[in-house]
Image (tube, rainbow, N blue to C red; front, top):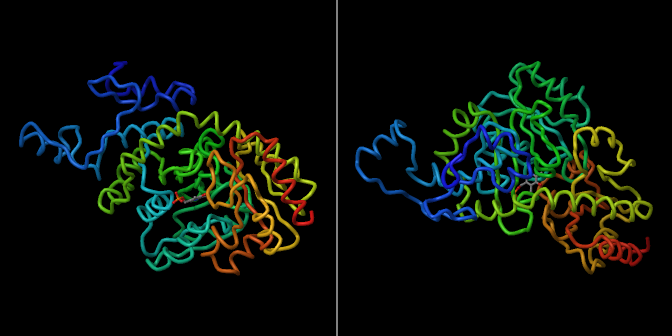
Length: 402
Ligand SMILES: *Cc1c(COP(=O)(O)O)cnc(C)c1O
């Protein structure tokens, strides 16, 4: 492999994920820079009129406009595809633009989508409000219930859309079981893997067709920029997603792509340490809260399923206080180290009240139906020492009378 330019996929595909996370997709300029170059350019110039004509005609490889290609962005796409074990990836400006693009690029009026009812608020909004406006029928089911998915299938069902673990109820969807059902019916599975990333869970290993991301979360990992990504087969990405993306323009800026690159270099380390910390904090507070929903704790009703498809528990869990919204908010206000923040995947520990924030846009009925109760809190455990995190959680619980 040439060390200064290009990437040789036949080699990089064989690397272990930690190597791919640091080096995958690197495409060096003639200067041989060590860190990926940041190409802040919207357009490109050409040595001749014939060259640009050949590029537009598809007869010659090369950049033409940054809505279509950008070297910094292309490096990130290659790296994410490698980590996911996907044939191809395209990145978008935010996780929500990734979800919107992944769904709208393949659904048309008259199609039907089935989604898990427990979902990130804006994902649920797409299912409940956006898709129906364009004549796309939608049904929501309990994502944990394979029979419910099967029963929701209609002749026009085209897509299954879900997260696992779901935000913020931590419901686990049986990836293998559901992908098998989808395959048997010719249905495309779109998995929102933002809670995990490929180092924790690889939905394609269980048969998923498309894996979509908010890269804002664990991938970027340090709470700096918004980003999204969609991974899939070359046929899907090039023939279905790209015609939509290149003409609607949900692009990720090269600067933000570069920041995500820096995040990926430490993804595995962060995911591992944050999962360990999350487990330590979860164990420490488990007996003091009325319910904890933590995929790494045996008290999770789907603990075994989580263990079978997740390599680590991840940094996020939820817990419920009996005193409802009042006690949950008092707990947040009592925290001294952990910040009140609705972001996740950050290196800092952040805690929020989903019913009044991430799931505020979902109707009260839908919230109740998916189990987002008023006393629920969701926490992202960061890279701080768990000793300090546990001390903070314990003093906050004491302050609210628990
Ligand atoms: C945050 C999040 C999104 C949305 O991502 P943005 O980058 O904020 O647009 C989608 N799905 C899940 C599960 C998320 O946690």
